[in-house]
Image 1 (cartoon, rainbow over the protein chains, first blue to last red):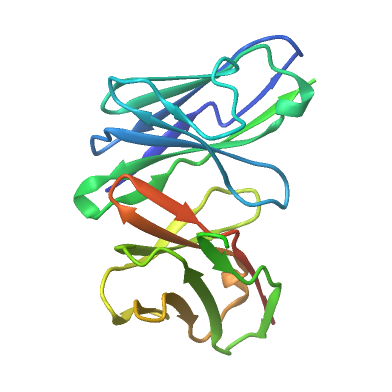
Image 2 (cartoon, each protein chain N blue to C red):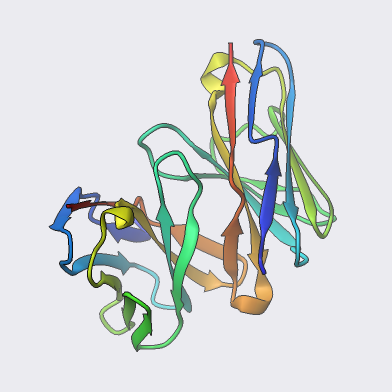
Length: 116
Length: 110
């Protein structure tokens, strides 16, 4: 149990385009999901907390208009990188909160984004 | 002071040895504690969770929690080269908030 999927697993796009990443909890409902970004050889950086049915909470320094988050159902959250630029190239990882297991976060496999 | 601190390593141990990973946290009201393993290029995967003082064993892994001293550790017995990864300590104050350490990179040499 506690499986989280992400789609796509990797994406290459041209500068200026928008990219949508989906995060799904497959076998449990997640009222809260998290979006992280990780650059090579660096630690996880929390970008935002996504709550079902409400606006996401963004960490300091993360542009909410650039990284659009939608958590429309208890099993799906999406992150849209708008007008992507090469500096947005990174490894984006989502996690879903399994509240019945004392707040354990289960991670998706990640999405590797390369902006040319 | 960082909320969750780990020695970044690298920690190198020979195959078959015990690897000891340590983590300290700053918030005394922290309730839940987790260890994740992250292989290079992959996302983190949960290894252990611990909620009360003492030891918790799962196979070759033992998590130790000492709330009075605000530290949590992970012991890996009979370390294998496949254990080489970055180990992330995470602390949750309530069910909706988890803070991660920067991770300790472990290398197990054959």
